Length: 92
Image (cartoon, rainbow, N blue to C red; front, side, top):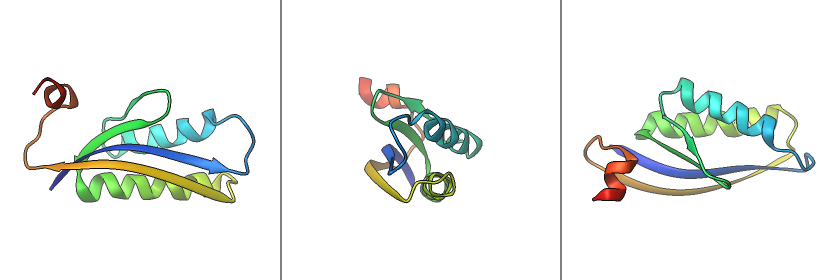
């Protein structure tokens, strides 16, 4: 099953700057082949279910390992049966 997700991984108790956490998650998603793209408040990613959710789990674990005592994660997802780009889905 293919999945498209919009995700926000929010470290709590770490201060104001989130750039190092965002960079770490961007690297994890890219290495997993999930093609991340970014908006001001969330990250878009897509791929096979296990591929995407494995990467999300690694993002959360990494944010904890970087010192976040708590992590709030917000997900919005859609599943589909074919491999289409996010741009194609928007145009359709």
